[in-house]
Amino acid sequence: MVHFLRGFIFFIKLTILVALGVLLAQHPGEAHLTWFGYRLDMSMGILLGGVLFGVALILLIVGAWRSLWRLPLLWAERRKKGRRRKNQATLIEGLSAIAAGEFPEARRLAKRAISLDTQHPLNLFLAGQAAYLSGKLEESNTHFLQMRKNPETAFLGLRGLILQARHTNNWEQMRQLLQEAMGLRPKSPWVLQQLLELDLRLGAFDKASMIVEQMQLRQLISKPESRRRQALIHWMKAEAAEMAGDESLFVQTAASAHYEAPEISTIAVRLAGHYHKIGKISKAQKILTGGYAHCPHPDFADQLTSLHLDTNALDQYREMEKLVEGAPNHPESLYILAKAAKGAKLWGQSRHYLTLLKSVSYSQRVCHLMAEIEEGENPHQANRAHEWRERAKAAPADPTWVCQSCHLTTPLWRPICPSCEGFDQITWRSPIANAATADLKETAPLLG
Image (tube, rainbow, N blue to C red; front, side, top):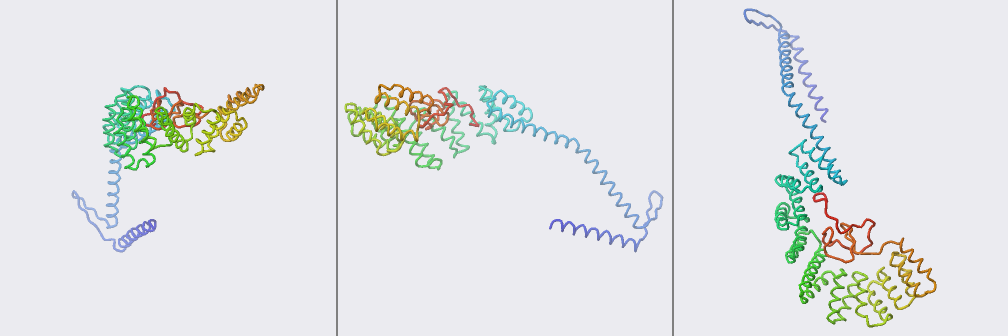
């Protein structure tokens, strides 16, 4: 349609020119021009042709002058585009260097990017990130403050300052910066999470509980997630009460934590242990049995064993059978029963459970338990036990508490990881090959 309209307009223009040509040919007319005493006689066609030629010549001269006049501007614009392309390439290289862990190289590229464009907001982002990761806190602080002044990068700047304040344990400044960030992005899950972790660190458990309620009201977390977080807050409050010697508050808050999240094995076991200490054996056993059904874990069996130390091994085996009734086919249940059967010298029963367990979870503890069974049932055939212990060296590692964020392995569950300080990140599973150590720190404040 567009091509048709253009063709139609061109046809109309051509028709008008042809009509004018025919008109001038049929009626040439005469024109007389007197200028400075000279008289020029010509036809109308020649006069119109001269006028058109003059107009065309003037337009050509004006166009050439405008091009010459704009030449410096065009050169400057072209140079600006070239610098912009170089800046973009430098930014990409700098961010790639950060991702690769080449922090000195990232700082060098950040300085180059700023020299190319001092106003580009992402240049400050790169410079602040690279300086922080290189340990140049004063330099990174300068860049983060500049980003904070720019509306486009204000939140990024605040994020960098917040994590830098956390790195230097400046909790009061961190709170002020988080409140400012909340004003910019009131629905930010990250800001609320940082406030939550700050309140937990400072022991402000009531404030932390209110933040969890806000997160649920804003639909940032689901109701089950909210209940679990409230349970963790109750448990941290219980631990603080226990350290302060307030047993009544410990029982109250620990019971609330267990009610909100019965799947957290450590809370159930610790609460049962407290009831055991004050002589409430049946209540302790009820908590262990109910808690195990929600989350099978070997700590339940250890605590149940401590409740029945005065009974013989066969009775303890029967108690273990009652314990695992809520999850009889779980790998932990099979291991617990195999271990209890071995203690009661029920060799065939113990082998049966281990045979089932090897098909789903073949790990080092299975091999060691098989070695103990061989030693107990066949004490004169030491080679069999030795073979199982050799197999244990190549078997997968046993489940343990592992942080999902930094992969730290730890013998105890904690609500907050002692390495990366992540909240509710520690889970019971097999460790990975490159498990982290306890001295790992957060290194990427903006990208991480």
